[in-house]
Length: 251
Length: 251
DNA sequence: AAGTGGTCTAGACCACCGA
DNA sequence: CGGTGGTCTAGACCACTTT
Image (cartoon, rainbow over all chains, first blue to last red; front, side, top):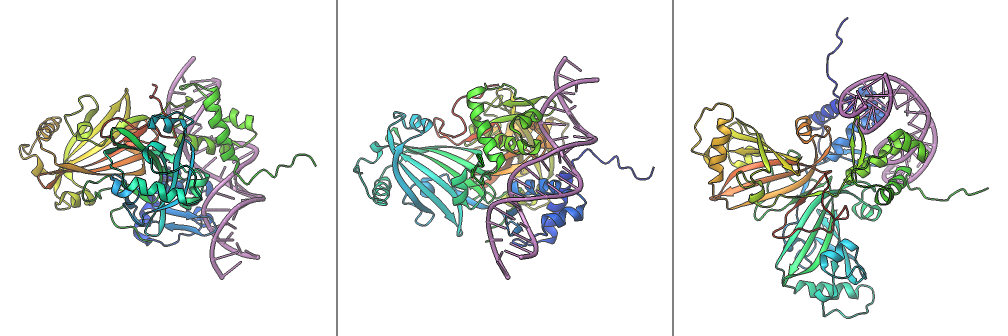
């Protein structure tokens, strides 16, 4: 009867994940490229699908980065991305962090209209932005601004003109505070493209309501790459006790 | 030759997900149980694995809840879980929200020790807690408290005695502020059990550093169920513009 | 015992990237 | 073009819950 293991009912992919996780710490450097999936599967004596299940988990934890046509690389610790204060997220404060992609006037989604306290079909300024960090895209955002918040912006505009006018008005606005929430989501087709990920990639969705003069001045929905980002809400220094790494992000 | 669709290179599972998502809105009520995976796969003419890929995404978005041996049910909107203020997370403030599971003295992990400013092998009080909401477990936490923060707690204790002593000291502590970060993780074996999920389930990991008198008084690592929780950082009301639902959580 | 979701296999083809 | 990860199939068995 030999060595019939009473091992466990631990799934193979879970065990695999543990082994790979340790190997990443000891045998690989950040940015290094792993053997391809077919070879890894063969090496561990499992089907490719099982190996992929283990890699999926490690990618969800931010340990790996997979790129089609290229390979699987070892990821560095996640970037700390400040999201708590207007200095970081309100237009005009962070000079290079946010890049305006588009600005139009359109009816707000129902949930947004409710938060803004306006009619569901009332058009609002919608400002699409992309946030860069260390040369990489980390998040996209849609800012919804009711006309009442930016009274100085006239009705018609050429492309780009509206964006400048709205941004200028917002920068001089006095904010009283914000309310925020964070939840897990998946990237839609457009977000995925801007974030340089595949559709369906996990993202952290930050919903913010900006208050000014007792009313809701604007509402934003931001989606951050969950694989590379650690959202920080510090009022001074930065925490760094996460189990998923404790150093700076390498490029 | 007929209707050969030049449809798209949109993956089948993505299209399926869209169909199911719409069906959830129109044809199902919260808590209702879906047809089983084999039947759904047959109905849509795809392999079960493909159908499961679509369900995986919907589960990641919090639209579904799957329980082995039972079935797949339609999930309600996520619960808003306040995590920003000590009233909600610091011991003693929320009477029924947190339940202490265990309390021991042990060396802190390296990253925690560094954040606390102590030696890596110096023992600290570690307090394990479970957070309940609406009768459901929503998060687990480990609080690391250096001895210097609770000088009134003597050395040896019977089970449970230490917890009471530490908690009493913490409740009278004056806090200056906190630093927080949020990132995506996966539930470990123990966390999964307490959260009534399978290991590997996605969780939101909140790392907090509590400051008192210019020093770090304690550090906590909390893991919240990503499927049912929307973390809120409000300073007053609650935002509700998330794309993933806008009503209250049903049981 | 029956039915559910979870794991696993051994293939196949496709979309994308780089040389 | 060859090599990579992404998608998909048609099965099988397992772990769990309910009856």
